[in-house]
Image (cartoon, rainbow, N blue to C red; front, side, top):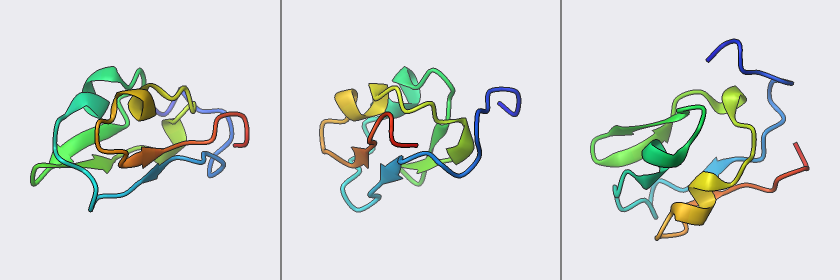
Length: 72
């Protein structure tokens, strides 16, 4: 996703791996595919591709993901 960037290192995306229950919803709803599953937990694979749309936050049943749209 190197071509889907605006400004690097400004995203407010935060993932709390301890809260992640491994449901895979974030990997399914993220339009830029920045999440993947490793050892039954989500990981951020491309932080700078996050456009802060909130799809992952709105679909995470355990509250493991936070983003503050418009700040980054």
